[in-house]
Image 1 (cartoon, helix red, strand yellow):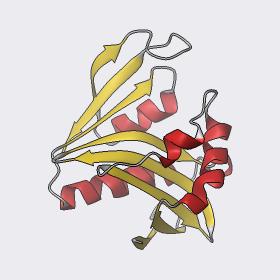
Image 2 (cartoon, rainbow, N blue to C red):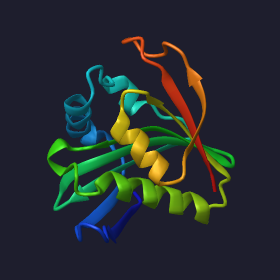
Image 3 (spheres, rainbow, N blue to C red):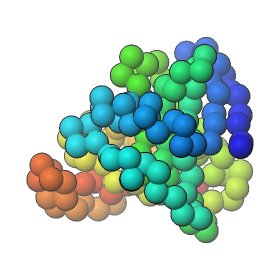
Image 4 (cartoon, one colour):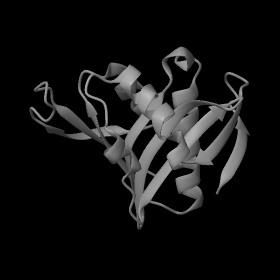
Length: 155
């Protein structure tokens, strides 16, 4: 299992990055549930293929964040970045995104794609802060009839 330890320069927390494993399912599901009205189910979380890239971010053995993505040839797609509610506002989301972008650059990937609910202003602002641009909209995409904003970043 791959693990890396990095210090979040902004909040000064020592963050351990580990590959997602089945033993993290319940804790990650709880984090997702506290952040989304229509959270993922267990099967979406454990779904893996050869392109899957899933990481957990821990501070003192407590999961504070989760990244689910796919890396397909020279492109990556972010499916989900989520941060435990009691750690929001501590730049954990920025740390996760910055770390992922840097890793993709090291691996010579070219583009990152994602979709985000137009109502999720925090996420949209985070992505824009890191240079993502809106390139299309999927009308009435979500069950609540809100639009999905498609974003990308060229590396």
